[in-house]
Amino acid sequence: MAAQDDVIIELDKVYKIFGPQPRGRALQLAKSGMRKNDVQAQTEHVVGMTNVSFQVNRGETFVIMGLSGSGKSTAIRTVNKLHDITDGHVWVDGVDVQALSGPPLQQFRREKMGMVFQHFALFPHRSVIDNTGYGLKVQGVDKTARDEASMRALNLVGLGSFAKSMPRELSGGMQQRVGLARALAADPDVLLMDEAFSALDPLIRRQMQDEMMAINAELKKTILFITHDLNEALRIGDKVCIMKDGAIVQIGTPEEILTRPATGYVAEFVQDVDQGRVIQVHEIMQEPQPVAAGTSLQEALQSLGDRAGAFVLGDDGKPKAVLTSADGIRAAGMGSTELQAGLREDFNSCTPQTTLNEIYSAAGRGLPIAVCDDDGRLVGNLDPRHIMEEMGRVENLIDDFEREVFM
Ligand SMILES: Nc1ncnc2c1ncn2[C@@H]1O[C@H](COP(=O)(O)OP(=O)(O)OP(=O)(O)O)[C@@H](O)[C@H]1O
Ligand SMILES: [Mg+2]
Image (cartoon, rainbow, N blue to C red; front, side, top):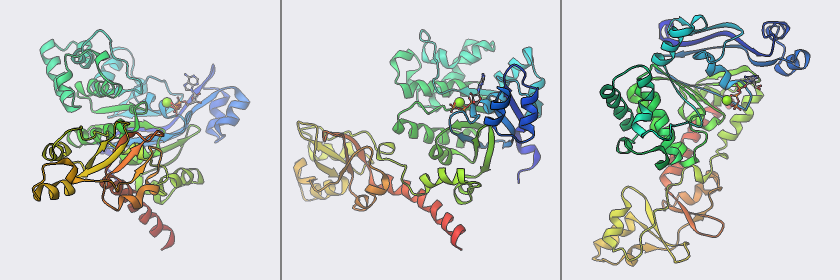
């Protein structure tokens, strides 16, 4: 157990009732343990949160996970008082958040918290660096200091060279990164992230998860992260809190959630994960980056970088052959300069929707796998090492699960 002074965010028996008389009968009924739907049927008030208590330690990534309407956004919004709560207490770094209002509340939000939302709105007519420094500008920080902090944040998220660009010149993923940079620029202790990556393509989304974890290994911010995706929760969370109908069902480390699901509800979620069924190829495949026509063997080898291999396409966009670094180096060692000498045609293919379980044994051959659309055109390059890594992570968790259950 962490010492008490390690706790930076605490919700203590928090209730949030939506409706004209939140503190009336609806609250009483919720406090008596009545479920959300029944309270609603009897009082026409909506239970946003009921008896929610959790503690987030300094430097921890705490993920709240649950289906739509389970109360995740309501929970995160109480932390910076975007919502008033109906009952209970919210503490952030020793401050009773509910007691704040006016300028002290503004100051608390600006200095303590950075927020990143699902659809991050950038100012279209301001450059990336000005968007990033906007919060600092509001705080009255002068331009030099602001630009310095913004550049630091943009470099962290890999967008340093886009500082002068306009938002319309950035992809959705890059815009979301600016959102993260804006939150980081003020160097807050706490990042509040509500479905921050949910609108991104699976591939970009995983990259963002990885990058966020890498950034935070350095910065050690406290992150309160909301998602409806259990895979994402297990991947990035030090602790995962599962909510249903405004109530907490379970709080634990990813391992605890997987190995000791508190209820059938959690177990049902977990089943999807522990069987590795849910992870589809498109979530871990890389850009196709095929070998350009007319490339020499040497050039093609160099273009591989640390990839397991790259495909050669026909005029129809379909993969015809693959160059792996092992094959290429062997052919070059025998004096070949022709790309053809390093190619092989006995590769495996799959679709973006193939699950890792289905492609697992093919990955055992160690060759890259061609990911093709319905017309057979190459849309992704799947590195067998990535499949193994991803499966291995899940396997470890299953092993723990089975040990727990059968021993
Ligand atoms: N301003 C509001 N007025 C009335 N009811 C609200 C309000 N905000 C949220 N609710 C209700 O509170 C409950 C929890 O909503 P909340 O937005 O916290 O869910 P969520 O878990 O974030 O869902 P999602 O994944 O869809 O974002 C829902 O039943 C919702 O209808
Ligand atoms: Mg929400």
